[in-house]
Length: 489
Image (cartoon, rainbow, N blue to C red; front, side):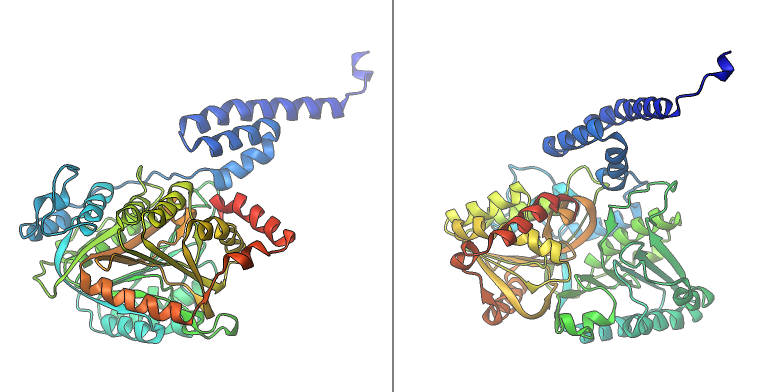
C-alpha cells in the first residue's frame, strides 16, 4: 500500500535544500566570526550566508577568504648577510622600540624606517646604489643586460608575463643562460599571466630552466584562494643586481597598445645588500609555488658597499598578520610635515588611509595625488572617482595623467623619504595582494622622484571640485556601486 503512494519530490528537494543551507550556515558562520575580519565585512558575509546560503557560500570561498597560510621561515643565511651590514647603523633601525630615537635619520625617515622594521622585520641597509627607471625599453634592456651577465643564477618574477615580443626576448635570454648551466627560475602569477601558454614556457624547461605558477585557480588544490594574487615584480641576478617596481613584462608596457599609448611606469634597479631582501622574498614565493626549498649560501653572497643609498625592501601579503606596506604608507602620510606627493594608478583608499590623507592637509601639508586620466581597469577608476569630492573638499590636490596610461606607484615625503614598488594606493594591494616596495631614506632619491612627479603633473589635468560636483547622477551612481565593490576589485 505504501509503495503505491507518490513520492513528493518537490517537497523532498525543498526540505533537502533547506537543511543543506542550514548546515552551511552553521559551519561557515562560526568560521567567519573566528576569522576576526573587519566588522562590516564580517556582518555582510553572515547575512549573505544566512539568507542566500548557497550563493553566499560560493562567493565566500571565491573572494571572502582574505588570508592564506603558508610555510614561512626567515632564512638564516639571508639574516646573517643582513647582520653583517647592521653594525654601521643605529641599532634601533632594526628594533621595535617606539621610545628609541634615530639621530642619524631625522623625521620623517627615522619613524618610517622604524615602522618598516617593526611591521616587516626588514632592516635598514646602507651601501646600496639605486637607479630610477621610467622608460620601459631602457628597463627591459637593462634587465636583459643583467641576465646576459649572470654567472650563478637568475630569478624572475612577474604578475603579468606576456608571450609577445617583449616576453619572448626575456624568455630567450633566460634560455641562453640555462643552456650555460646557470640556475634560472621564472615565477608568474597564475591569474595575471593566465594567457601564458605551456608551449611558450617549454623552451625554457628544455634548456634546463625552471618555471612556476603562483596559486593556480584550480579547486581542491592546497591554499586555493582565487582572489589572492601575487602582484610582485622582481628580478635578481647573482644576488647582486635586482629590479623591482611597477613594470610587468609585455609589449603593452612599451606602448604597443594604441589605447594606452604611451605607457608610463616607474621601476628601480638595485645593487647592494638590498638585493638580498628581494632574493629572500622571491625564494619564499618560489617555495610556496613549487615546494623547492633553496638553502645554498651562494644565493646570498657577501656584498660590500657599492653606493650611498639607505634602503629597506618591504614585502607584504595576505599571509601576514600585519599589512606591512599599509602600515608603512600610513606612517609616511601621518609623518609628513611639508609635502606629500603620491603617484598611483588605482586610488581606492580604505578609511584609515583616507583619514590620514585628509588630516595631512589639515596640518598644512601640500598633498598632491597623480592618477590616470584613462585606466586599464575602468571599474577601479570609477571606484577611485567616488573619493574625489571628499579629497578635494579636504584640500587634497588631484591630477589626472594625460596622455596614455599611468601605472607608476611612488610616494615622496618632505623630500626626505621615498618609495617605488608594486603596491597601489588601494584596498587590494593593502589586503589581498602579495606586494613588494623599495623604501629609500635620504634626500637624493627623494629629490629625484619629486622632480619626476612635478614634471608629470605639469603635463596632467588638475581635477576641479566644480567639475566633480557637476557630474550627472548616473555617473555618481556608478561610482557609488564601484565603491561598494572596491574591497574585492
